[in-house]
Length: 155
Image (cartoon, rainbow, N blue to C red; front, side, top):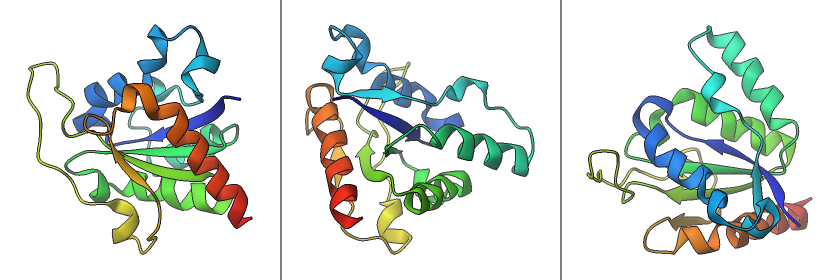
């Protein structure tokens, strides 16, 4: 069964790389075959002020059961990513991190690896993966399901 996934990432810096992950299901037979659904229409979020952005985050987390944090070079320092992690934990979502720094951007370049936001926030034990080295295209659905099952076991 596919899970509904909320993708958290540094919008300005990582939207190209995040798009590669978020749209990886397109070449699969269907969303069920991909193993996940993305509930966030992240393109719609613009700078609308702090409360509007937080409201948008809470609203888009509602239908999700897993939050995937796409970790780029500066992701762990982003206040809205931290807010999304906090809200996801409060909601009981499964959590996982996916390092995306090795995904080539539109110019063909990669970036330095960013720090783990879960560790920085004092949440050890949340599984992280590397999209390129760990075969994200083929394994994302499995990672999402594992995060969901881990959250179920904690509840």
